[in-house]
Amino acid sequence: MDENGDTLGARFMLYQIESQGDGYNWRCLGQYVNPGFGKPIIQTIKWTVAKEGGNVRIAVLLPLTGDLAHDGQEMLSILRYAAEHFNQYAESCGSDLHLELVVEDTAGDPDKAAAVIKKTLSQGIKNIIGLISSSELAEVKPLVDAAGAIVISPTSSAPSLSTKDRIYRLVLNDAAQTKALAKLMQQDGKKNVVVLYRDDTYGQDLVKSFQSNFQGKVTPLAYNPAHPDFSALLQQAGQTVQKGISSETAVLAVSYDEIVTVLKDIPADSTLLRVRWYGSDGSALSHALQADQETAAKAAQLSYTAPDYTPYGDYFTPLYAVLNNKLQPAEPSKESSVSVFDGLWLLGCAYLEKGTSADIQEINSYVGKHAFCGLSGVLALDENGDRRFGYYKFYQLYTVIFTSVNKTIIESQKCKKKN
Image: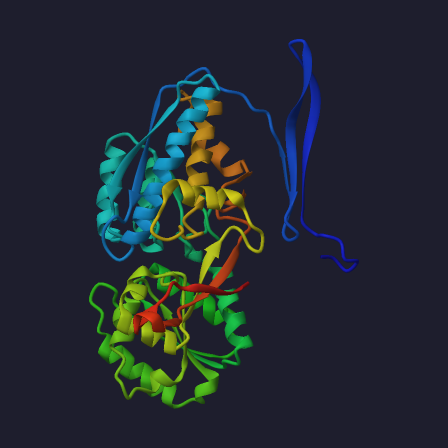
């Protein structure tokens, strides 16, 4: 609300009445979207369907194995559903355009991602969706830049990759996430933070950004994600924590599913068990952590809290519920994964309007400039191809005791607060 109690955000559509056969219909000519912050989106809609259809191959490069396998499998399921419905939509528009998904496993490993990219480009495919980690994306960036390929990354967020190129990212970059983390910690009275972080593009960028946003002392401690030595890391972290006041000190873990090993390796007498723990989006809603009963209980005792990107904020969208109803996942899809649906449709609409004979520059121009309201809310990109609008929800793992079954069960991670 503004100072007068009126709603700040607004969306208007421009319609024009026109004749159609023996009657008249209203046709949408454009939209105006003001989310209440940042620059509004003003877009003219001149929808046409190209005559040239046919098959368009899209490389889907996701971690189907490894630490990020759950996210990769979830996004692949969403992408297959999105492609199925886009192809049906194209047919309803009178086009024979067909999106074909060419799936490859990157295992979340930068070296393997580079090998997969070389294979993809050698096949003449220049439309790519995936490479969900910033480390993968940083490794392949020189290759895709040289080839002039288009990459739509669902969840890469490192600020150092926010450049003017043909890489488009469907979540806010970590400059926004670290502001949210810093604000929450300051509200919780934290003045000293020990950061345990992956020594890769994701971890390095996030720590640097957090240091610039947190108004207190930050002690960064890095580990090699390929060959971590958590015992030495935790010993050093414990010594640092011991020097501060417990109520004013916290630990921030910038990690993926290896957070399970980190927490498991904390010694029983460590001072690390007497301070509050936070995480980054890499461990938010971690199924690996939730599934390990002993470690999950420890995380709950530490009030382990981590943010994850969401396109929805405070408002409810029935489309998210429809998606989960159609796909029937074991648990609702992560809200940060849903944007991949719109990423595929954005690329598909470019070919539907421009035609399969369009060169990659025409497709790139369409993808970079078009905004629309899709399954993941308003999808609009900034001048560097990063998402302009979005939110974060903070999740906390906690213990629920069911006395009827005479055992403790670690229940799903629930949203604690939003920022």
